[in-house]
Length: 144
Image: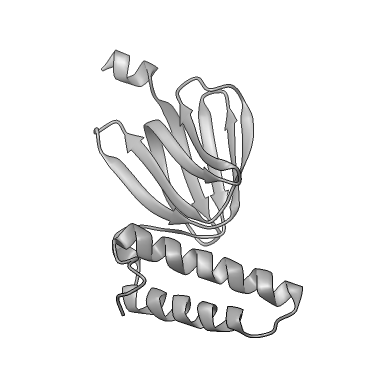
């Protein structure tokens, strides 16, 4: 067990409305602005911008967990990682029908003339919906 503890780090994922998870982990893979970003034990201190996407983390029980997260950031200091995001959801918490409706609504809004601010807001809504559907395994655009 000592070897497991040595190769792990403390992980805390905080959403705007809840503590999503906290405990020891071996690995975290984040959706960063410039691609996926992986953190292992004893990583150098760093800050990472997190974008809406799929976050995966490997816990001491040997299980990979998946979450859909919103924009935010992650900080690694002294073998402790804190992830602060707008929202965090487990795949089983996602309402698939609602996510499909949000995707369709965002796609329709993108076809309309919008201000720059509305465009970016719609893009963010579409990214959230598509990520939710991808994580639940229902992201086939031909399915209704």
